Length: 254
Image (tube, rainbow, N blue to C red):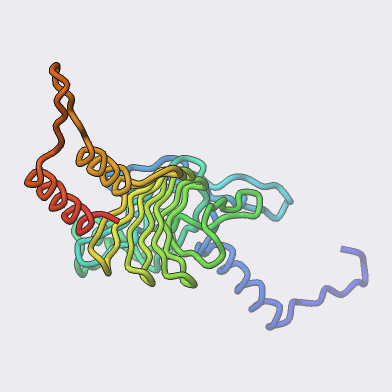
């Protein structure tokens, strides 16, 4: 100390602020992370915290891997949605107020083993939070909600009310407005028409109904010449039966 210099003690406000900072710096609440490994059977993950610890001397260090973290799953009533979570997926890590070990093992209400709070050992993981560097790639349109892997999708369009499943080429589409269901590869298609209860099989050239109708017309017009030069035609009764087939086809097909 320099002779004659007076050292001012910290004020109560400064002491309390420092105390507050010490508490906050040691408390784990919510941090971004990256999946290190995922157990699909237990639905748990090992996660690397994206932040680094900072010390008063300016040095930094990585957090240890956070192990055995329950992963949030969309579910209810015995039904759930499953996603192929993999190493490198970004996520959000939440830290519980209390020890979760007993609850995680047995479920139901539980008394924590100890008094630890906001510990790295008591983490839950929510996958689906992305940094801008790893922003989500989707094939969903702005008016669609659904599931996409960037190429294929299952979607509901809020503006057209259509439900679509496609890999980019083949497509199944349900149109609520017209009550039709369509399966197509971009050229050929099968259409089930709800209002008429008919099915259309067609491509860019023709349809099954037109092809079969044309075949029946040609069958009715067949003539047969025997070796003696006699000519025979399809009988009236047979033509009547073929007409019944045409009627049935028009009832079934579009």
